[in-house]
Image 1 (cartoon, rainbow, N blue to C red):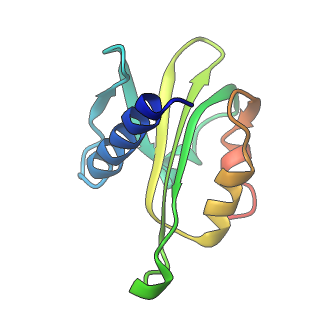
Image 2 (spheres, rainbow, N blue to C red):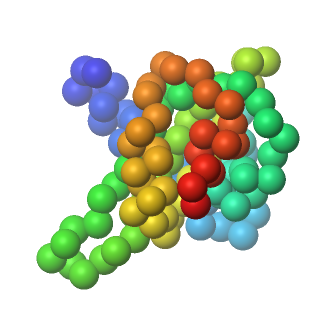
Length: 119
């Protein structure tokens, strides 16, 4: 991933994380201006099963020196019908961070099980 793409992804991920803190789930846009809906993990876990491909994933590890124990995660995926959506969690556990890290970019999975199994 080039430096510009990485920087753009980090900016997008931070934007998604900040937006996910609001009470209403706002519509987001991808880098091409297409709407991307954002869901927290607990809402996403209630979805009916579907096939989707990981487009991007981001795990922000807490700094040990700060005493934080919460991870921040963002997963952007594309459903088989072409719809893109993002799943975020601000106060994710290490188990959730490990699950996200185990998912491979550009690989298809059955969701929400792939993201919620084991939590």
